[in-house]
Image (cartoon, rainbow, N blue to C red; front, side, top):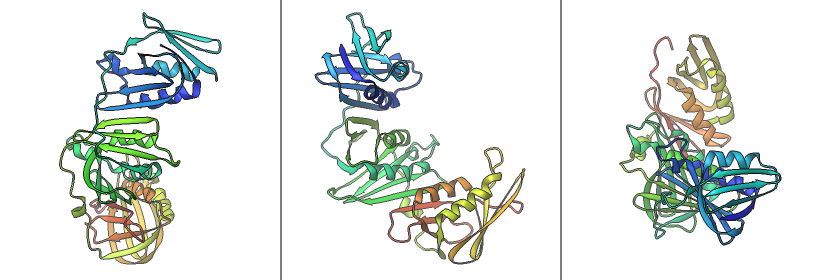
Length: 369
């Protein structure tokens, strides 16, 4: 195998494919990248047996072939090379030479024949979305994905396609995030749950630029095609929470709040809260103000925030991080805050429409909180 490629192009390929490479494995091949040179394109593949990333770019191919190189070492070498064209050549004994400028590295590669093949995914049923849309839908729900492996189905996001309406849902037992979009040019009904770690990698690969991402789910796996990059991952089996039933249909109080002011107040009150010093933030709604307070071993904090509306003498406690995550994800300057009682969840949604819904369960307050 023999090819040349611009350093930045090669570094980008390695960085993207390496996201699917496991750090340490009983199979050394899984710590490597499959490097394939064909005709006028260079393809790098990383695979950890549950998620695989294959990414391609144009390169000057002199002699086609395939090898496996240790992902971390390959990335570190190319990253430190001068800003120039990188030349890579492998002989019959798999001795691989990497040259750039005056720098030369000689590595022993591994045969590509034993590298595991990525799962085959049927392209019979699929749909496409603008990249920017999917990126925002993931970013605005992924924080609510559970990390509790005892219920694997909730360690991913539910994708629910109903006609031309796409819902993305995440839940972790303490909060619920729903993001909705109407997508032109698609129709059909399907449901599948994509693992959270895979979605985080997809979010990194997606761009805000024009262009679509193609999505092909089948029974066990799903394929995302983003430009010259393909990500294939397993789907999670199981029965996802009936999230519609979890969202209250009626509220006693519905008010409007300045999202930025609310975030700032909660952040100030939460300054005395840490991983070691945990305690809920107490929200006392009184008229058109919410009084926030917190007590931990280091002291007490207090602040107030005005809102548009009126709530009479309601006290409720929340995990500060869960409320902040929801408010930060909402994005709008003004949000609708809906409450029913001190033992019921708070629901944050837009003033108009149902683009997003964030539900956070309360924390039972003690007298000295």
